[in-house]
Image (cartoon, rainbow over all chains, first blue to last red; front, side):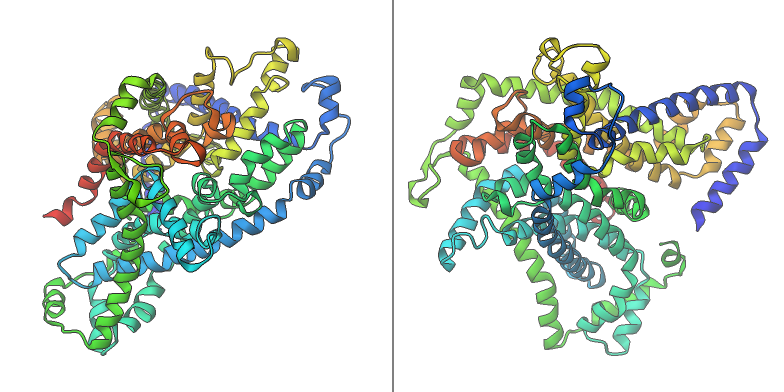
Length: 302
Length: 310
């Protein structure tokens, strides 16, 4: 990759200009950044450490007491008492379909806008990108009323409101804007003649998308998929306002209620929070490249 | 990505061919579906409700029958500006938030990115440490920090205070906003660092080397060479800083619930649009929130669509 080449290049040049003052400065900066980095990790490390201790020990000896017991009891209890499996199932039921639809619809939109020259293309792209930036609160009241009205119309009040479907749809509607924007700037870098040769061969629009473009979109789709999964997983607002039955809520929104309910056993809550963070920690440790490139794909245009 | 851009592009011919193309019936249908489904969903659930909220903010409505909507003119806004002192309290908190992010958190993120990009020793580890909070949800962040700051938490423990005399970091007005800002910065700094690092990777390294050979100090190099070259990323960073400061909601809500505690616009809107307290005053609040972020939104769009507009 070109990035590595640049890095090597940089290193060579840097070796040439050994300035002593710069060295000293660098050392101070390094120490500073290092101390901060450890401070940065401390809150998570402390929560993790606390989650391994029984709360009664802290009650008895204070938070700084030497641990007598370190075990996973809090985790076992959190899973059963907080009904975490239910909340995780809810999360999966919302996140997976939402991410799939965002990627599908966003890529379709980006495909048409960049591969066919219609007059409305720029306007559509602008509409989608701008829509993604509107505050969720601005759309909430009418969406809520529409969900109820549609529910009444189909004879089931909870068809969209208080149902995973409603939360999925609003995520798709919003985030599709971001996906369209990111994928269209990616597609602009794919040479036109790839499309041209497909069209010369007489490929239909359908084939052109699924057989020619889609395979080329794998890298940005992977990045966007990771980013969107993280965002929707972490969403707090929509699942809070569009759902009224607590047992239907995804894990992130459920944490609010769990915090109130388990306030008397905070170490259990620590275990619950650590479990809730696991999927995002997987993103951190394993899918970091995709997450970062998804984030910056939109920010820096490819 | 680099492989795609590397191929040359004899565009002129391709463009002509594209314009001449006519579509078969089936292709026209496919294209219609490809554009139609996303556009319908987006307009129906984002743009239509947004416009409807703006209209509703000028009305009285209990929210039950459409027929009950009554024109109210500016009454909801007058109510907010002149009869709701908490609005100004919340606005004050949001402004402090914005100033803190703009003057401290965002510059720190940029500084970090700049130093880490120079590949100081251990930069991989540092980068990971600062990036970790970015993946966590604000709800989890609220719980994690509560751990350190609650009456029987770490900080009070270190201060040697019993529960009865412990500092209430979230309850005491002297501390709460600063505590919240620290928590928010914990995530924001890493976020800005990531964005800026990606931008820095794209800035030609030789540019910087040249500046330093010419005898420029690190600071001069950053200010005169790197910062101007980063113009597009700078705009995005500013936009994100403003939008995040204005829309802060999750973390405050997880700590205080909907009851307030620390007044902030995001929670105020929530109180007025969701549940029992719903009224069109809530719509007016949402519109105010929108208007406050319209300048950064337009700035962002102008930058992103510069080429398309030509």
